[in-house]
Image (cartoon, rainbow, N blue to C red; front, side, top):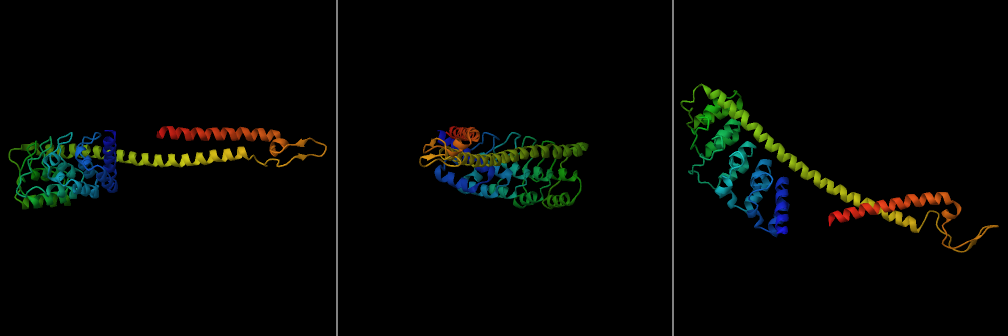
Length: 311
């Protein structure tokens, strides 16, 4: 059980980083792990959702390679997040066209997917129009014109939304695309259209930005954590070397030792093995041993700390 949890944790970390190599290794070790990790515990999103949000196209392709039925499974395509949006909405929100195309490929062209709405009643086309995702709108309309006049929870069609937005190159292009496919304005939405359209624009974008910032923070934390581990390894190497040097200095003190019996003029005989520093400079010798002992003990303490933490 612990091994399974560890593999799933590695899979989740690989998803955040877009690490295709780690994904391939994990699939060789435990291929069913991808099926088990349908929802991540942190964001309540599938690995495919997270990869799509962060723009890890290569990782998304690998996920679909190992689990091709991901793209065709309704529970993945139409699985709703905290605000009712599906992964199809997510691809539009985070400006990810390629994952959107891959997810819609298994759906028959004549199959109606326009009834897939978030909690505000917005279809994928509504979301793409409100966020001025020109390429997404073009792809959706090229693929199918079903639901082009579908209205959202505020009673607005895609054409209503674009009509009330500030005119620029993108809005003009999207409007032309919609009109060319037979889009029309909804009837009976009255004088509140401008207000409701502004609500669509102002309520959606901050929400998407907050989630994107949260994902970026977690990704950065993972990177910083890895850097911290590398620094810890370097520190362990350094203190090990310092401990070895302190030990060497203890068994071979500065100045060396007397090798044979020696006698000073008019003085006592110096026995072999006597430290020259201790004999001629006792004060400096005591200072040396204090510093050397403190260094050795401190280095060993750090080594023991790292070893105990690792186990």
